[in-house]
Length: 162
Image (cartoon, rainbow, N blue to C red; front, side, top):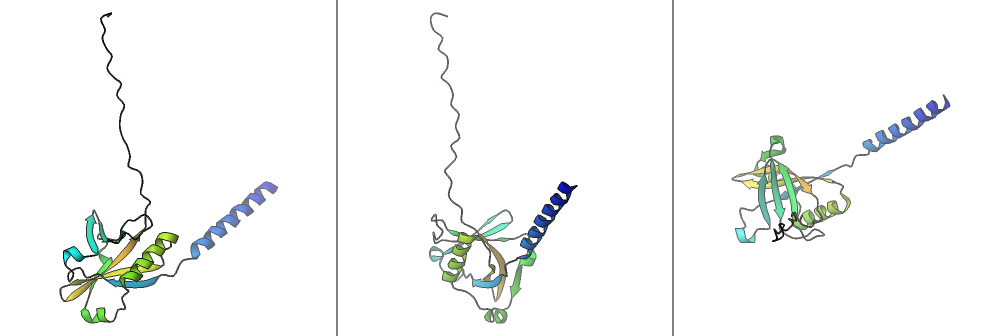
């Protein structure tokens, strides 16, 4: 009976500890970056956009991460509520960050892996703007290429003795 009471006490202690850890959520600040690729010639653009399956990638060509890779942000195109159209007047009321601040946020996230910001890219769309929720894609240490090969033994020689 003594062991059962001690076991229940230990289990309840760890259960409360886990519940408290889940309540310590980080308050996220919201940041906005105006991504205007239309007014920059193609050869001078710092951002390229790519799409793979349901993810749209925004790649900042700066080789700023610790392993010399480009910085990647992404949005999920299967979630239409994460993109909304705003007017020019509404855009003028939004305080946007600079590209250097954007790089600082990304590199800090790469160091501590704590997402402290809710990020939006604002992209011109005619006379209006599209505001898209984007996420940080953390740096990844490059891996060695996988060498996949099969060693085939040499064929047996059929000699004169057979």
